[in-house]
Image (tube, rainbow, N blue to C red; front, side, top):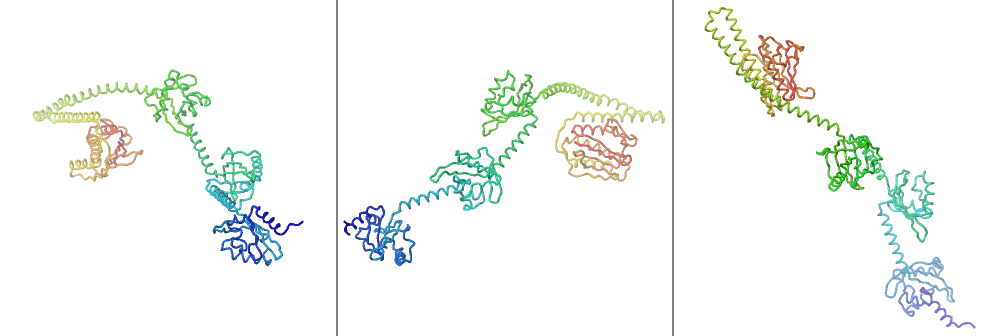
Length: 626
């Protein structure tokens, strides 16, 4: 027996009310003819409030016109695309609130034509989930793009599924050019085959691999250029399968820094090996970490026998305990200590022999901790020289004492010469003059000549005594050093020479601005003697030309006095500065031969030397340095 129409309708309504989604059936005019309980709950209307109403009541007003036009196309058969498909729409509740809907539309034939059944699902939560997912993806993308390294995510087949902005910048590809490409696109061609094997091995036993894990890796840019890279790998399990996250860093600068570090280390080791002293580097515990070749040579140990040993292995046994305390005190308050800083130190060779050393210490802070660099020098020869110097100093003290005694004797002699010899000479000269005056008529011409010769000899002897005393005083004179204007001294001496012989035609050329550091009184004596000699030996020259100036000689400043006088034979130049040595006739050019000896001694007292050049009849030039 078939159920009646009301019972079929009740049965259909019960089925619709049990559906999890909203169901709305509309006629060909777009009016609601049936809704289920979920539709009431979904839109907030009572069932009676919806029946007979246009279905556009359930959508925002801005979409209603477009819906009516679309419905007409469906009814007339001009629009069939929406039938049987799931589309997304915006619904509107009774309170005016809008929410996202997912709609599936079916067309049902009835006696009066067609009706349309719309199955509606509120996808608000799903959309929220999608937005949250999109937000997470956006944040993940932002984090990845902000990462300093290139990030490449590949699937189990080695195909790229995600890259960040740094990947584009580093490899020169646009992001779209990399997605779904094999990861080997970023590997140099010569290494691609091998890389596939490495990738499979990694996926077979995935593990986190730190960046720069002892591998020399290279990347390839879009333009084909290669560059060194460091890569860290991290496997990740997802619902879509295993993924591998690769963080890739351009290692060009790191490689350059490593090379620079290796080069510096090479230079450091080269300098260390070339050092003239033994160099030992020890840690805070006093254990040797590095030595150079000189350490092996001086101490007699091969290098490998010293590394890791306590520094006390190089210290004589009797000093070791004390040395440990000194070392610990130095580590507690490290400072640079110069070599040989007043300490008597000794080293011990591998054969047990001891030798004196000088040591300088320098603390150095490193990433591995504090180190101490010790430069050690064998001072055996220096100690021998020091002892010789001490002996020489003692001898010098004795010699100085003897010299002081000699000087005292010379002073006594000078006093004796000045007083005891002058008196007889004055007597000889005086009585000879008296004899000539009182008894000149009885002596005759021969007697007059003899007495005149006696007087001249006595007077010459007096001049010699005066010059000897001057030379002695110059030798013993104390030095009072100051800046001296030599040009001004020469000008005054030239004026005095002109004043003594005003009728003589003389041309002095004195260079201005000549100065020296020395004893002003002694330097005046030098210029007086040299310019006086030039004046004397240019007698008879008209005009007389005397020049005072300076020049460079053996990288030193040399002062000179040049004249156009008699000159001399250079074959006798070695006799010039000897006391009482003369190269000219005393009758023509009078003098005692003491002046140049005095010049030389003064110049020597100033640490310089004196010499001369000349040509007979063409003048002479006398030079001196200070």
